[in-house]
Amino acid sequence: MQSLTSRRAFLFAFAAILFLSSSAFGAATITVRNDDAPGVGFRDPTPVSPVGGNNGTTLGQQRLIAAQHAADIWAQVLTSDVPIVISAFWSNNMGCTDSGATLASAGSIGDTRNFAGAIPNTLYPFALGNAISRTDLNGSTPEIGARFNLRIGQAGCLSSRQWYYGLDNNHGSFGVDLVTVALHEFGHGLGFASFTDESTGIQPKGLPSVYDRFLKDNTTGKFWPDMTDTERVASAINVGNLVWTGPQVTGSVPGVLSSGFDGSNHARVFAPNPVAPGSSVSHWDTFLTPNQLMEPNISNNLTHSVTVPQDLTLALLIDIGWGGTSGPPPTPTPTPTPPANDNFASAQVISGCSGSVTGTNVASTHEPGEPNHLSDGTGGTHSVWYQWQAPVSASVTIDTSGSHYDTALAVYTGSAVNNLVAIAKNDDVNPGIVQSSIVTFNATANTTYRIAVDGFDGGDGGDVGDIKLNWLESNCATPPQILLEQGGPVADQAAIFDSILHIRDPFLVQNTGNLFLPPGDAYTRVVIFVANLPSPTLTVNLVDNNGSSFNITPIDVHEFTDLPFSQVTFRLPNGMSPGTAKVKVISQGLTSNTATFRLL
Image 1: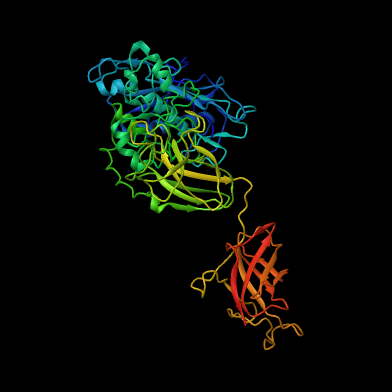
Image 2: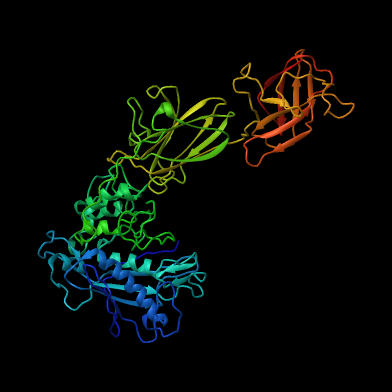
């Protein structure tokens, strides 16, 4: 993913003016104005072939057609009686390396306030102020300024990538889709941006922007206009706890996102620590799933939609005052069914020395008597349960790395949710920065540990989202496991049969009536099935009814590619006594369980 970081500059230098007529047919007219110098950017005369529905015959024409296509998408879903002009050009002076680049930047060229229909003493971007007031408040000045990085694909600037000018989003793995980038940048100019300096907390003219009025810090419970400059600086780096509270977005979240929102369906806003000037606060958090247009980094799986159920951008613009043609807020998606491991008694069983499982705590609950899963009481009310039995006595680490929200993690022993002994609890790997959780403790072999995964509670019931739970026990290897007969004569009856006659036990040690055995060797060949076999090199240990022990090398070990066990064939040795025999396998120092079978 490459940067879509946008510095919301308000002043642009404009060159000779050339308009491309807008083909928008929606409720607004948005025109991309070509402010490039001759021979550059939108005016590049290099001949090109049509691509992805873009029939421009020069490189400059295709660039302008793609940018205008993005403007038309916005025009179709917004309402404004005042035409919107975007002053756009291509630049050779934007940040770029071979590993990352600023693809483009855009913003409102200015702000306005206290017009008819405005929230008093609140700053609005020009385009939104004009739409609400139905008046051209900025006269001949363009409403939005945008610039695009001309160096993409050149040496030292994402040299393995190139701009894609098609209108069909068929950019492939190495194409940077100009329509998507323009949609993102124009979204900033339309109002998806805070005017506050995220590094100092200072608001222009001492006033909040309309965008700021929907920013809430879940840790302090304060909205941005109610904070001091110092508090806003802290909030801008409060990872995972800066959220958007607008009703249109909040009502749309259940139908759009699977993670990246708090317990009140407030979508998370990008607030990394340290602050990312120009990106912090004015984008969605990168934890939102599926990826959203207004995240700070471009994703290859973005669509050209700005509306639900694919995207929340238009919903946010409606929250700040835009009229849209998308109709009333969508009907909220019914509350999801709680996950299967919501309750302690229904814990998902995990096993082995190491592994990973995925899940979710969306719609999960907190049972009566259930403890808080963080030591300081800030665990949430959306927990799910796992249980794991330690194979050996050793140190084990359990973490939630790869989860898509601010997790809380706790490990207990005990058999009832209201009578547990806490072993370890953790909120963040690196407080406020790495919001996955991790615990390490000394496990005791064969002890069952109860693992709860919850979310940090900033006063909203706790975060929710997709979970990835990982565990790793040191100095541990899972021993082989002989499969047992279900419903056999005894509980430890091996799943065993004669490998030639395909009959189950009891067996004759020697079966002279079996004409399929090799001449002169009438000893029965049998088959057992073994899971977790670390190597095909193994020893079969047999103990007969008299206690005599035999260590034998199997005839064959067959490892199935599509089954979770191996087939072990061995010959019964001379001298075994009739009665109940015991069998186990030893491989690489690991000994399996002991199973039984019967001899005649």
